[in-house]
Length: 306
Image (tube, rainbow, N blue to C red; front, side):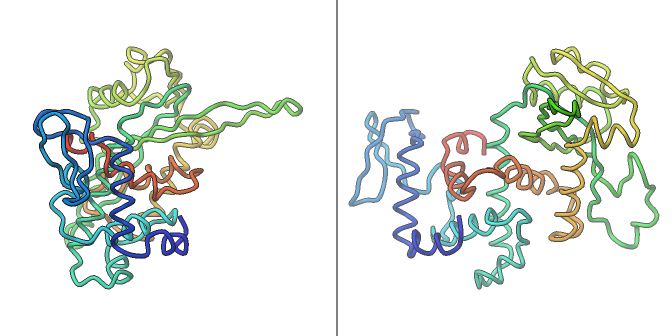
């Protein structure tokens, strides 16, 4: 959504509340007391009331805004700035744009929303043909100890991230040239290089009918137990450019994005930043990511997976 469109549609606090109520009604409200999904709206109270037990639910309750006292319009503006550009925005810059006094408040809102993005994407599995590889992302390390840490695989200066790309092979009928088209991605931080952790990730992230393309890492030997087929190739420059093309494009773009906006990221929050990057990447062809994020922020799964 463009900024001018936002200003026209959400000109004040009331218009934001009305839209949030509309989305909640459309997506469904779950009663925290009895689990009933049938509610009706009490206009005088600005609350939902359960049709079974009469338990009342506030407009924010069970959503990403629960326990927040900030105006709805502030939340909407944060969602807009986070989704209006491919690159994203740092918390300090967003604080400046909003004219808000406290940095940590804006930082907290952004991380709540990143959590919603990650949980939303976790609902879906990749299918068809999927490229799989790992990328190493620099994390924030004190400068006095940074140079003492080893480099390369297993370095304490880096975080290992599993990257998956849903890739569809294409062939030009006239020239016979092979290429590929990419749809959806997943990026997950790995705590170790153990095969068991990678296998668990594959089992939860990919459809069993998937064909996986990867290099010949020893951590990938048992992939065929969880997918239809596993095709391996020796890791070299050709593999990077042709076989695992989209995975490495995603890794490169993510690294450039993080370096330009956030510089080095605290390792504790790396998954949150990856969730934001992948959420927007997977919706790159959507007309309005902002509206999809509002839907994700009210979706009932939030209150059961908080």
